[in-house]
Length: 196
Image (cartoon, rainbow, N blue to C red; front, side):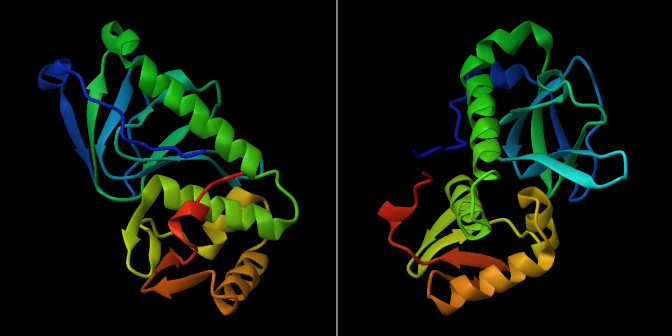
């Protein structure tokens, strides 16, 4: 399956209010607002009773996000890069049905892959998911254009940072990936960038 976060825009866009957020800023909580991401990447999250962060999803250009799509409390939207959004008032939500379906599909896909076993398959499928959603083609492979720490990957995949580090080193030794600055490049041919 191939997923893309590029959702077609409508003419109503010229009338929508735009808002800018900086990297690591938390977007304001609002029961009556959905946001469509025009530029940047965000993470939706909650946390457990012990204060442990739980990632609910990663979202990019064209994705629609916001508290009305969730029944989770607490709920927060953290900007992982600088972000530009369009504010979608309730009266136009019905015009965003494709983006809302896309949100559901992305959530279910992430949920299904974080339950894969063994953990090596779970991590590899997560990397493929990130490459499909935030990837850029390079001569050497597919660059995941989102920097996540080993700890952040471990939290998403319900494993330890040590396990993620060990498996990434193993994938690198096998030639499946290489490091470029703080990012990862998946080296398999493009036709193998599919999540099963």
